[in-house]
Each structure stands twice: as structure tokens, then as C-alpha cells.
Image (cartoon, rainbow, N blue to C red; front, side, top):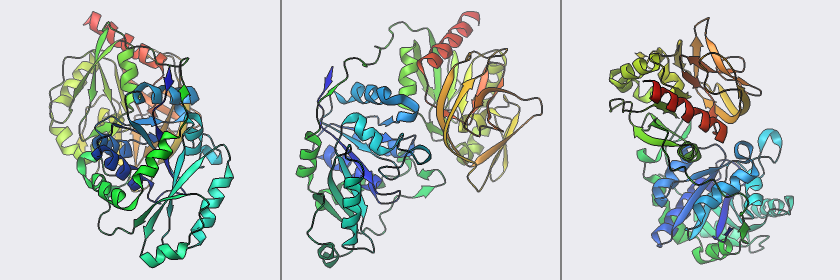
Length: 446
């Protein structure tokens, strides 16, 4: 299989330079132009991806070499880009910023894997000709990465643009004026989710007016063909072994689409539901992703779903919760008030004003009574402003190194067939097979 889809990476010199604005605006402009745009986000980000998906009408995928491996990045890219007119990949942080000061999992790493040309976003605020030195430094830093164009952001006036000068280490594809009063709001985990704001879509007009769209398309079309014949994904399984309920609403909205797809390929029928508004559906297992349960704690406490979850957990239904899902599966959650949660895991969650954990993790699931995961490895990341206090006799299903977990590198608080972890895991095929198998066993023995 050869992928010939035009593609570009929108990278930045640093976080906050405007690459999310440019990437989302470009996606909007190209979509409004009638093109089928397949969006991607480098790194373990859920929020920017939600905006991409709304803008493009196609699910945005994460590309993360640390969690997926190089082959996994190619596999995910190839599996959804074939019918697109163009793929737009938004970078993370600065172009060369990777794990622990290395190049690993950087935007540049992803660009090299995909052999994709890079358009560099440069914040020109409070500078003029000096930004050209920045561009030249980025262009020459790693010759394996092709920076094919630059977009200057926050241009104050026509005079400001003239002061930057005409010398072009890399061809300028856009000059975006400084926008005031058109910012997308943020909260402690980043931008608000796409269903809470339409702000990103508005940047399509700004990109159309400020950037050379035809030249950007030419850059994307210059990307060489990718031969991925050896790493195409396994076709989805035709036989359903079990039904897995996946919580999806405003409180639980952090998911890697690859995780959902891999569960389906392992034999799961996916059934989405809202723990806030719905009764528990007729399913054989539950997957609760991360999100913002603290913002909807009153609704979660008042929902009948939490009582049904407790009853099914007690009867042996396998459940897996991540971060926000972990907090919901515990006894209570303190935000502005203390709220009762599902009461399955012996723990209390409390929101904090400071960041408690941030970064990639590696680990292994532990063996033990009632643990359906087996001793398989995992990779993922942590990012949360809360802490969980467990009962003294709490048991844990995951050992992390590196990683904070719930306490001292121990993660995956477990009770009955339920596991709740702070880690946002990128599911392996082995994990998905075990989860679906545990769900199928529960289905047979109900």
C-alpha cells in the first residue's frame, strides 16, 4: 500500500506562538474550500484534536512515537489518510522539543517518520528582523527536517511587516495580523473542548486573508509517497464477542480514537452512553475515559447511572477508568463541594490548584486475583490537577517506571474486576484482546 496524500506539519518555535490557531484556521479554510481534510495532532493531546474533528468533520488522530512507535505512527496515518485530499498535522510545543530534552516524540520526529514538509509558525510580536535569524536557525538545526515555509504571527502593522525585511531564509507563506478579542478560552488542562467554543472555526477567514493558500497546497503536494504495505492495520474483526460501553459526554471526553478502533478490531461492539444523562446500557464491560467530572459532579451524583455501575461492578463486570474515570469510580469527589460518586473503588478524589503530574509514563500491569489484564506492558501519559487518597488496604494493578500514578508509582486502583488509573494509556493489541475477553467471559456467566 502506497499513500500519496498531500500532507504538511504545522509546527511552532515554542508553545504559545500560535500554531494551534494557524493549524485550526488552515483546516477550516481548506474545508470551506471543499477539500477533504484529515486532521492529526502530535503528542498526547485530546483538546486540540476535538477542535480539529469539529472543523474538518473527520475524527482527528494522535500521532505519538513514544506511545505508538514509529510504525504505529505510519499505521495510524495511512489508515485514515487514503481518501483525504490533504492531511494537516498540528505539532506540539516547539518543533524539536521531545521527551526529557531529546528528539523522541517531538514534532520533528513525526515529520521525519511521515516525510512531511514543515511550515513553521513564528511569533513576530515585539521583534522585527531578528525573527529571520530564528527561522534560519530552525532551518539549519536538523537537515533531516524540511522546513518548506514560514507563517509569521502577530504582525502589528504594515510597517512592522516591512521592518522584518525581505531576506527569506525560508519562503514566507503568511503574515497574520495581531488578533485581539478573538482568543479561545482555556482552563487548567488547556483550551476548552470544541463543543464549548466555536472560536477556532472563525480563524479560517483570517488564514484565507493572511496566507497564500495555493502555495501552502503546493508545499503539501511536494511530500513524497509513503510505502506502508508492511504495516497496514489488521482489518476489523467481523464477529462480535462482547459489547463495551464507552462513556462519552461533556464530563468524559478524552479518548484516543485508536483505542476505540483497537477494541473494535479485538471483537468489541462499541456502545456510547452518558453517565450524566443515560441509564446504564446493556453492555458487558465499561470504559470511562478522562475529562472534566469535577465540572459536572452535581449531575454525576444525581444520575441513576452511578448506582447501576456499582451494582454491575459488584457482580463482576470488567471496567476500566482513566483519570476522570478514576475519580468517578471512587467514593467521592471534592471540588467546590463534596459529591458522591460511583462508590466502586476505595478512594476519595480531591481537586487541587496546582499540577500534580505531567509527562509520559511506562509501566506494567500486575498479576493478581481478579486482574484480567495479565502482566503486559503499557505506555501513556499523566496530566492532572487532582489527587486520590486511597484506603490503607488498597490494591493496585499497575506499576509505573517512570511515572507518579496514584501514589509512589503505583497506579490502577482495583476492586472486583474494576481498574481506575491516572494514566491515559495508549492501548496495545494485547490489552484490547484481554479487555474484550474479560467482557466476553462476563457475558457468558451473567
